[in-house]
Length: 391
Ligand code: AMP
Ligand code: MG
Image (cartoon, rainbow, N blue to C red; front, side, top):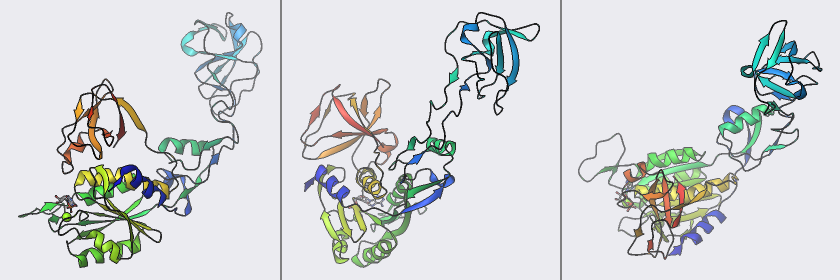
């Protein structure tokens, strides 16, 4: 049995990179950017009014001012503001030359003869300076960044409509177990529904990869072999759940070896997920995930996700937060690192939720994240800081 840290190191070091492709803005969200993006212009491009109001000279705020013109967004000012004058201006319009202050409509009083008066108290000038948000040639998105919807706005702003991103990993999914029927079936006798495959497909999609489901393999070598062979041919990564423990019908490791794959580890000091089995072939990786749904879920988040991120050159990882524990925690045995599902209290503490172990899938539904209990630690006092990651 190896430590979690050792297993994690092996997984990250075994990863291989995928190629690149160019996609349009509509396909860019969720993808890993491979080539940094620079701005082709200043933003704002000119000194811009942040409010609807009147542009004037700061030193004229105490005087009645003659209104020269109205500057709407999308039109350039025609007149220069000189002493004793101002221009009516709308949000997003360019501030006229000569003006260094915009007072809001709400702080103005219109007077007879096309004149206006400032009625507020001087404060913020309400002008966004040219280039204060983005400078021309500035790098706005770095390589290794996962493009989010808000980044799409930045790309659109700087006129980048085609981005170079990593190709998406293709990930095959197989479940094993004679007890399994598909979710649309009613289990009979000793059967249960296959929840891992649907869960994994959703996790794969969330990770920005392309999942393909291959069905349920029976607990016999032939059945596992034929599905694994096909899935390995068609994918970069294969996730096979169940059949990796040491029971009489846990045949997955044997099939991995017979297919010429190299098993790097098959037991890790972590909970849940001790029988996680990881093997690789030429530009292929297979994760044998323990069948219990919580194990499958967490091992995807911790190990598979890391592997996929490496494949696509992602350099940003989900943050691990330090939070005070809401209650005392103790466990009898501490030889494994363990993850326990938790919520966050309104006071910002991590509070374990009711959790019966790795088969208790519904515990995760009510959880915000998981607390990491380090190996060797058997109790933690309320208020002590613990590491928490969102799930
Ligand atoms: P195994 O790792 O095959 O020994 O399975 C461990 C436990 O997880 C058993 O109780 C299985 O019935 C359950 N299990 C295995 N695969 C799945 C699956 N795809 N969906 C739901 N439960 C599963
Ligand atoms: Mg099984």
